[in-house]
Image (cartoon, rainbow, N blue to C red; front, side):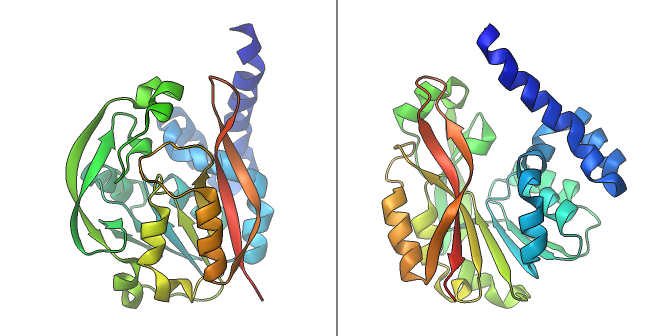
Length: 257
């Protein structure tokens, strides 16, 4: 128990100090930290990379796997003028996302999963909603994080990202974020034309099998290379509480010049 205190103290400090880093949004972020901590989670984690986001200054952000709007909120805090296009399939998440980003005139939301087909698909809604996926969960995931063990199969719409290309204004440079819990290969397969307009891809990658049939890091690396991107390092890592091994990282791929 005691050896967990430094990590808990560090996390508490990050949440406490983040509102001070954005003085023009101090009261909003501080209020959300008290009322809705999951919504400010990405802002807290990504603030360490704020200078990088501001330096690339994307004209558009494509947010695939929007959850309740945590990434969109972080991007808006750092990039007040960029267009944000968010895709989220679960109805309850979609409703929360609409509410959380209400009034943002440079934000557009689509209720669908993204893959390489059109229509509907089975979707495993996890009790820990952020871990929900088109793919069933592997035992390793459930053992490492018992709160994710329960899930319910629901039906959601699915489409290709390319189907929405005409509904997005993609001013270069363009940043795409993928958070689709192992379904990255299918999402990218349906985004071949969109990827031609994308300069940066920030995607969650697994280094151990967490979902059935998920793409491996090696496969995703090869896939991104085939689309003209090079691997440029990682952001956060998800560490197994069981043995300390790295389960996932957020990998950055940059279009080759």
